[in-house]
Length: 145
Picture: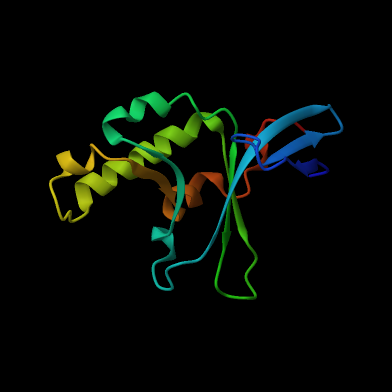
């Protein structure tokens, strides 16, 4: 892509990389999440934790995502390349909320969901959610051509 990427210091909140397009001098902070494949048979169910929140207060985190995310998925097959999914900051919350709603609707819970929703829970996105629209979508960084 011709971009320059520089890691930030460990104490930079919500920014792991600064990515710059030297052609137009645009720069963006990026949050990176990396994961090795967990499930051998149903890899599309693997998920990236994004943040933790009390579900009843979920709307409070909606506007806290200030940068795009790059999710790096490393398959177990040594010959396979890592897969990269680029998600604009505006889409992160809706993907997390969609995954939470599926969890509430489709999972078997050991206790009533009303109790679960009162405690901090991880918000996450699955590989399946990312595959169709976000794989190698580097244009979603917003750095132009």
